[in-house]
Length: 464
Image (cartoon, rainbow, N blue to C red):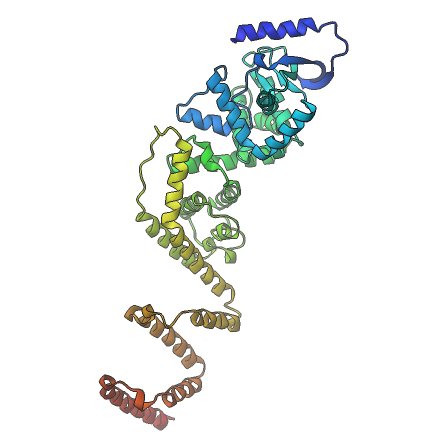
């Protein structure tokens, strides 16, 4: 059914019910004032889904980026939109489906005079799926979408992202919605005026809308970083990390923040962003992700120059060895292709990333415990005790060199604070050496070392 036919059919429903005073009426805000509008039973076959509905905006935009345009007036387009609407909130859809099947449509929708659904796409999808009802309860606006795009955008946003509805949106959609509205308004309004309108329509403060746009800017940079431009599905399950990263870089750029290490530059912030993108890609989250740059300087890697330089150098060395397959933009299911690509990247780097985080988090803990030496030393002892010294690799020369280096650090510390403790420890060690257990090939070397010990002990005794 084409547009002209839909307009005619819907108008016939309206004309047929002009004298029916028993029809339900409902107030809506239209063109700046509350108006009482009649609710009509519009046959479902007269309706067209809005493919740019706020609930599935990221999905349709991603498909269009892949040159998979959706024609909502075709059978294929209708089915595709229905699938996207179902997948957007499957658990809730199942619950609503049962309710509609038992009691019918309880919340009124809104359509244009040519049948585009402005509010109620999800409900209409469920009615089509159930097939128990053949009509949609709706207010009919006196315009088409093309005739009044801004007023319809305002109406849709107010209804779908008001206080009761906004929690039902997928996490990424509100950011994309704010940016899309801004793009529509900026030709007729200043940025401040546009922001005020978006805030009013979405039921939020202007500062919240600014935050949405800033976060979405970070999301866009992330997608471009991996050549995923416009594929908004690759932002799924990463909202909190983008919020954190946006706050970090907004505060750090310009070199005026006290939370990073002293003397940092914007180039360092660029490195932070690039590294954070990699961690977002593999879906690091929570406390471990915040170790990058969250909070006071003593609580994150970017707050200590030595730790940050070590951490970032290790990170860039790790990813420099990663080879990825080129993106196949002609893939019939680009989302699945990119999800698989990200998963393979994660498998290649996850152990190295985790090791890098663990090692530098330990350095942070050591720094925080610098004024609590007893606690730090106990932790070091526990770490050494946890090593399997019976493992064959423990006897490797490289490992033994590290053990020797550790021992030298301990002895050096004792020597500075208490030489008596060193001598007591040496005496204890000598007492524990059994001559009968010394290997044949070490006897001559040991004799030389005992002579040297005697000589050094005599010299020290004489000097005292």
